[in-house]
Image 1 (cartoon, rainbow, N blue to C red):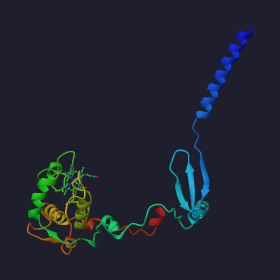
Image 2 (image 1 turned 60 degrees about the vertical axis):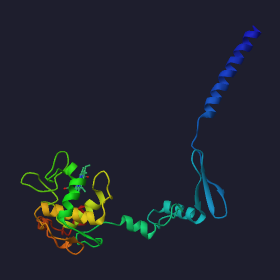
Image 3 (image 1 turned 120 degrees about the vertical axis):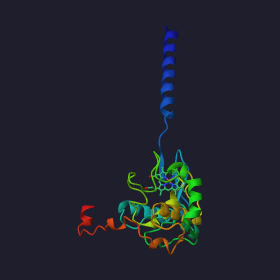
Image 4 (image 1 turned 180 degrees about the vertical axis):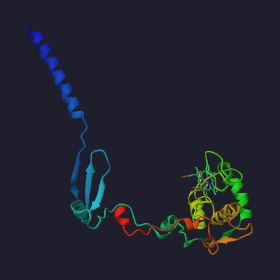
Length: 225
Ligand code: HEC
């Protein structure tokens, strides 16, 4: 009898140990703030991630920011200030008036060759559209296109430079973008085939649909948006 008891006891002990082991193995998310303060940095340690370092001032600013998010934004001491070159590489938007258009020029003849090589596969050989891709050259039945709808010629340059060809955006040189823009304008019967497109001439082109767009001048604009 005593032997049986001790086997039972042993079994329950093993079971308890098992449960204990399972319970203690369960991972907990522990975040200690701050776990260590060095000269000027607070090191925040998480159990499953790297140390995140913030300096003492930033930590205080972070607390202040949390308390009042409208206050000065906290400085986290993460990353670095972008260089002028890095900003210039991203700052490529061209507004309707053409400010920021780059050096160089192009024309529709050069653009025709480029279009066939880099655009026709999706936008069709004549640009009038091939499902599922959109048309770029207006005809009587293909709806809104760059030619019939877009209000500013400069937007064609901006859009093509930043986003086309679809599979390799940013791969065209500025000269190529000028030429393709000229080609699209020519095929839409907006300019002559031999017109040179550059930073001076492009903003002066008046698109057929330009006057249909009107600024929203409602006085209560802000209250309805
Ligand atoms: C791999 C297919 C593909 C290629 C190649 C391609 N495009 Fe596109 N293009 C698209 C798609 C898809 C859209 C629609 C993108 C969207 O709405 O976000 C588009 C949209 C456009 C638009 C906007 C049309 C509109 O009315 O909104 C223009 C302009 C344009 N492409 C020009 C070009 C030019 C110029 C080239 C050649 C340099 C080119 N595309 C090459 C697929 C392609």
